[in-house]
Amino acid sequence: MVATINRLAPYFGGREVPVRESRKLMTLPDVPELAVAETIPGGVGTLEEHRGGWFPSRRKTMSRLFDAYERSVRWAQHADRTHNDFLDSIILAGLETDGVDMAREDRKGIARDFIDRLQLRKLVQIGKEPLADIATESEQEAHRQLQYRVAATKNRVAHWLLDRLDHLVKAEAIGQIAFLSPEVCRFYFYTFGFKQGQPRLSRSWEDGTTRYTEYEIQRTMTHDVHYHELVNVTVDGLDARVRKPRRIKEFIRTAPSWLVPHLRIVHGKEVFRHTERRVIHTNTITKTETETVAHYDPAITLGRYVLAGWEP
Image 1 (cartoon, rainbow, N blue to C red):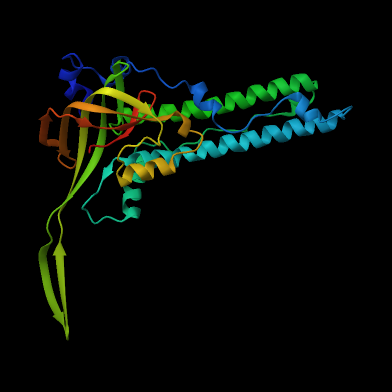
Image 2: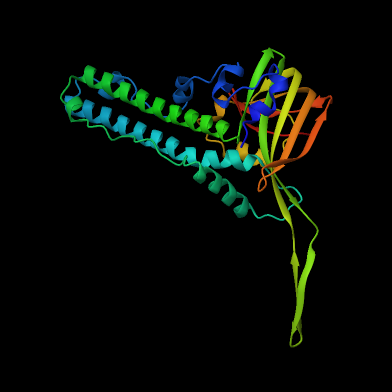
């Protein structure tokens, strides 16, 4: 599939840009991995909290330290497991099925298959490091080492998520955003559109007193890229008072709680839109729309990534 960034080259200075250089083109700073990691629950707390009063035994203090570490590891493992569901939710948010008779389970199946083909369902190996050596250290040193391990584990989980998002950019499943000024931005995102034709009589037959009729319904799936330019931009949290279609509401509802503080809705006055649609099975562009408009148009972002977008 031709890199979308090349098809949109006229809007990014007129030159073709390989996918591997798209990060340089989109100038919005990334969400630091450390910032994402810090919102993952868990932590070993302070040494004073574990000592719990006057003259505690070393055994009790060390036991409390390791209990806190194990709880933190379980939180990190839970956050890691939510990655797979979150990746599915991103693809689901891009499925435009309005007017198409498609069950939710069918839509979820499409999302799962997409992520499976990209081989993104991998978990970070968490809590596999030996701990016996730490148990022989002083309380202060054990506390320091366990704190470091918890922070490193959370950072690995955050890094893994952002790495998965880079893969989705290259796979043309999510887009990116760039701010030209605090109130002017441009971004692109993808949707998978489904169109359903009128039922067509296939055959009919009778069996005793019962008549059977079969219909064929043609369904077309397109891969669409949407390029937008906005002015008077506002960046809000997920509770922004903008119209949200059902697929976006579902995405917001299923977003991991530890990631929600980093998600934003960017909206403003849309002054330009370019849309390209192509049928999946032929991989050709079937319709191109270019228009100048002036209305409000939002997207959900995580740093420079555009996870989902919609048009009024």
